Image (cartoon, rainbow, N blue to C red; front, side):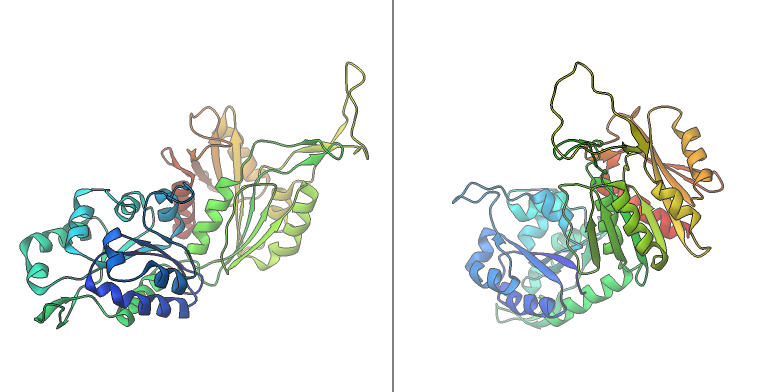
Length: 397
């Protein structure tokens, strides 16, 4: 569980008092924990206790009434490797089944792109009620992982099934879950991302509109699958933190090439999504170029081809994937690039497709392998596209 990101949802059941111990166990496994509490759960355990043990602020409402900041439920669900709701009361369970979102926890559930795991807790008659059994069955059919309630003494004084699984048992479920989710454990992946900037003078550069979002999402997906990731990125606002991540920030194509040359031999997979500038100024001015004449003529020289270098220096045991953003005849150009640069796979997208390209949160791709087999995907968020790419590689190599 080291480095795993667990979003813990806490609802208003008496079993909430055990969550302090659960958080301590999770932290001992070196996982990161963030917590969402329903307002009712605050009657059973203090948000201060949860915040102190998790070492992260606790989120309860959609916005912070003190400073007006918004609790972004979409980002919460995207951040996590798993969303664990424990304890899950019968009331909140019914809300999840019917898609209600009257609090931050239920809204996060509806927008979560990560797997969801629940640990129900209620009195034995409630747990055995046909409505509850239907709701559990529905959540299971919605691909929610259920940690069954356990037999034992209940708050009502009755003895039977309905007790939330003990914290140690919940951690065992998490460990088992993550063992199944380690497709690339023991694999080192080199990823390039973002644009490169080629300086004209101390304040101006030649570059492009790449945001780095695609490469960072791919890196995130490989990390979630247990890989060690070396990320070489051009200028970007994107952030990513993980114990298995080594990030190197560069500016120019030459700087990116030097890091690729340093690390490529120790990697099994390369995914080169960076939008590298093809040319750089032949001369860089030491001082800011002043506007004087009506024309300014620049002489440009070709930048090193980082992807081609990796293809030329690829061993038979390494797998290399490149990217091609085209404006016309996308498949034809991509196939030429695939062969010329000795790639195993190429991801192609085109600005002819609405919602694809730089600076947006969506993409529509096709993947072509070295045998010219083509797989097409629908328009999706870049996070989902990254999932498709990583899954495709897992199934193809």
